[in-house]
Length: 110
Image (cartoon, rainbow, N blue to C red; front, side, top):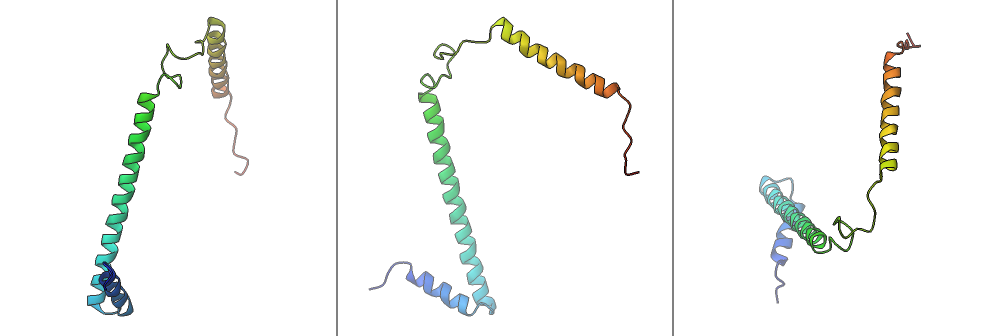
C-alpha cells in the first residue's frame, strides 16, 4: 500500500542525493518554492484569522472594557488636573527655550 505524498518525498530525497546535477537542482528549487508559498499562505491565513478574532472581540465587547464614554467608570479630567498638565507642558517649553538660547558647548575632543 502506498502512502499519499511519499512519491514526493522520495523524489525530493533523490534530488537531494544528486543535487549537483541541474535536473535535480531544478526539482529542489521547485520544491523549495512551493514550500515557501505554502508557508506564506499559512502565515497569512493565521494572521487574518487572528486579526478577525481581535476585531470581533473589540466590537462585541466595547462596553465591557470601558471603551464607550458612557460605559466607563473613570471620570474625565477636572480643571485642576488639566491645568497641572498644561503647566507641565509650559515648563518644558520654557526649559527648551532656555537651553536653545544658551551658548553652544564646544566639543572637548577638538
